[in-house]
Length: 107
Image 1 (tube, rainbow, N blue to C red):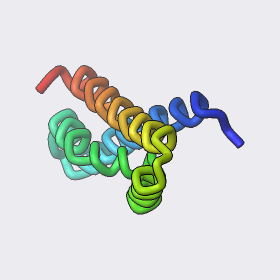
Image 2: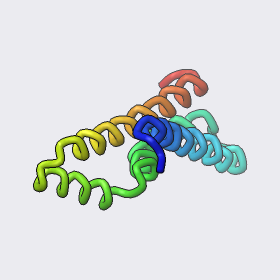
Image 3: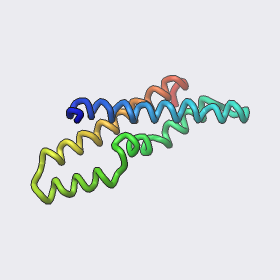
Image 4: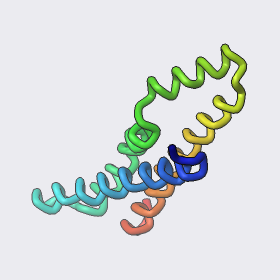
């Protein structure tokens, strides 16, 4: 079983990888179609953020179930861990978006 800090980093880098990978590979479609790849890459990075978060935490229903059980059964440590996992996914996705916009030359 992985430790708490290992899972935090796994979630963060999974969200980062989904964000970067989807944006970079998705911009190849613009290259093939003679479109603007940097604009497409930035647009994809913005649109894929929520999906990167969901993919990183492993789906939303499990997280919601764990939050519900933690709240109703009084396990506040479990709730806190899930919130930190979600924040880690947000940070990874946002970091990916910032990197893509930086690579593309800004907004």
